[in-house]
Amino acid sequence: MKTGALIIGDELLSGKRQDKHLGELIRMLAARGLKLSYAEYLGDDPERITAALQRAFVSGDRVFSFGGIGATPDDHTRAAAARALGVPLYRHAEATALIEARFGEDAYPDRVRMAEFPEGATLIPNPVNTIAGFSVERVHFVPGFPAMAWPMVQWVLENVYPDDVNTHPDVEKSLIALNAREGDLIPLMESFVARYPELKLSSLPSLGNERITGMHIEFGFTGPEAQVDAALAGLGEELQRRGYVLAERS
Image (cartoon, rainbow, N blue to C red):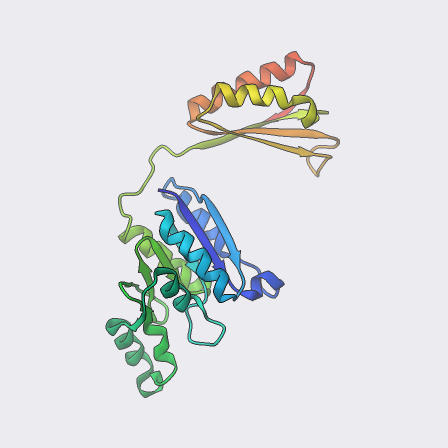
């Protein structure tokens, strides 16, 4: 199953706040031998959020949506999810009870809106302030606050997908060829892509950095370890045969 992320908020696109969700989600998935397939950043634009959620629902992927599920006028995610599904928002009884227990009479008339979910939603418990997130199908909605969002994502992984653990995850290994230019090596790269179709090849050119002075390319392969080792060894041998010096292998 592929995993995607939608990270929502104008404050991220303006630079007012820096996103922390992407790196943490990658870490949590990696702990289970899984990886993130894609991520999308969205501002507080109801139409764009609705369109992104429509794609998420029809994809069949596991998608985590961060942000926009509060009760303020700039929180559009709950309504956008309902529009994307073509269903009404309704006041979820259990979510309502949690908000009433926390805020009492002050739950009304505004805070209780956070219990309005698309029809068919199930709850994601919030261990910080008890105000629940929600799931519909394989799309999971959590707040934008990292302290709340991350344990809620962890709960989803452990309770909704307890058996989705990869005990033999892909590995990524690389080597660096000095004084190499991508344009000179495209046919060579294409030959290795054809030879190892189950692997992903990456080519990262650089004009120099703090580790290596001067132009170089870092070539990498991602996939099953035995095949990665074979492909990397073959590429290194071919590069050396062509006169390139290999600076480093990781």
